[in-house]
Image (cartoon, rainbow, N blue to C red; front, side, top):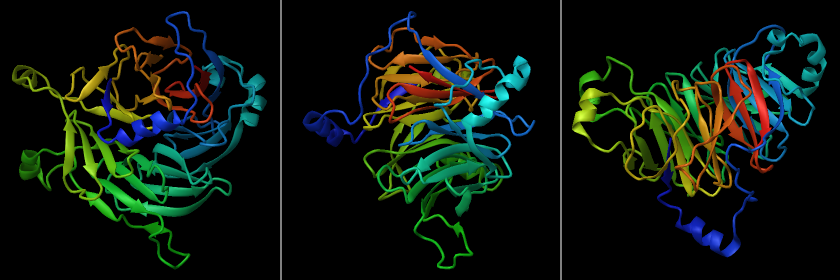
Length: 390
């Protein structure tokens, strides 16, 4: 996993010098002796239907509420303040279904079928009044969180939508990345005057964003492009970062001239290695609240140009395994294919990470809470979502 310095963060540095951090900083975790308070775990269960969770997202203000999406197309909201069991095993498999079911029902605030396919990404926007979902049905939907009603549908991708991210200050602007190899910009204000029409077309699209020129020449129209695995709207409010499934490259785009990337962070050239091994791509990107760092979960161990810190210890064997840098840029939390989560101190990249146990399957999606320092959620193929104080 690599961390990249933001290329346009000088204003953030100046702001920090004048006003300090916008987030509350906490003491660094100690080594193996850290005692993490697991708040509890909930099982994903829809009246006996138990799809694995795929994405999680904390409310920005109501930090006790976490949104969870799953392979079945459900969007569920949970209250993490309810005293739920700390066991992370699936309720039925743990043999405590009857005992814990009432507690589980109290923790679940609401749920509904948001898509007819898996939901790969979710995030809150507009003072937590709306929720964005990105799905394998090739659409992005905007939901009224209170009324559970779809208020907008963003249509145009021709493959599963893998990643979404709102503009840092204007949540009417959305960027999305798709398995079709493109990323697109959307403006929620650009809608038909008719209330009957909820669909919004993109305002800009970059096709084959991570395909090499030779691939475009030889395979155009014959095969799918390199999938976009993760997309970020950066804190400078002008730049977009994108990652692909094959090329191990992170690209940076200027929205004022979006057709060509301005910067690429790619593996150091080594002809002998390149012939012997293929690149495996990047599973996720994240940034801290001030935009000083970008972290990337890499499925190979190659050191990349412009890398300032590298963190090792987890196993990223699928694109479902994600990582995220904490809002205060102090820690990095990552899932892992070995069934654990891992935490590193950003300022101590050479030290071994702290292992967080509690799941019985591959630890996949996760999220940091922006308003409660140190609070995080992890999801797993064991059909559960676990909340912790780190």
